[in-house]
Length: 82
Image (cartoon, rainbow, N blue to C red; front, side, top):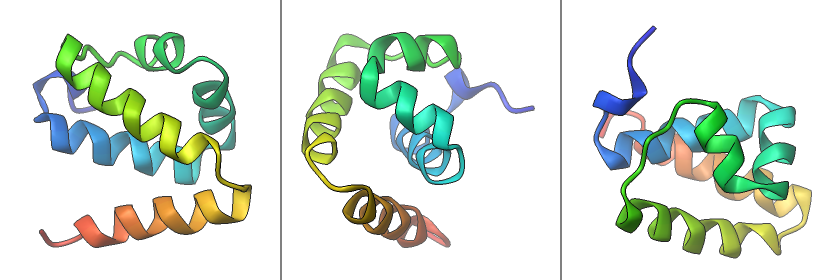
């Protein structure tokens, strides 16, 4: 298993988006308590990275499940091959 702390921030964001698409429990936990969930999963983000992630979290937390699925899947697919 790859050490997620050695990934660039953009790669960590992609990994988080992939988890949100593929793991319903992760998504539910992250929507409820983002900081606790990413810490539990071993992500170690700087203060600036956490602020960026929280902005993203705020944006998607107001979406319906269907909108969130579409948005996250698009984000993940948009990164394939880039």
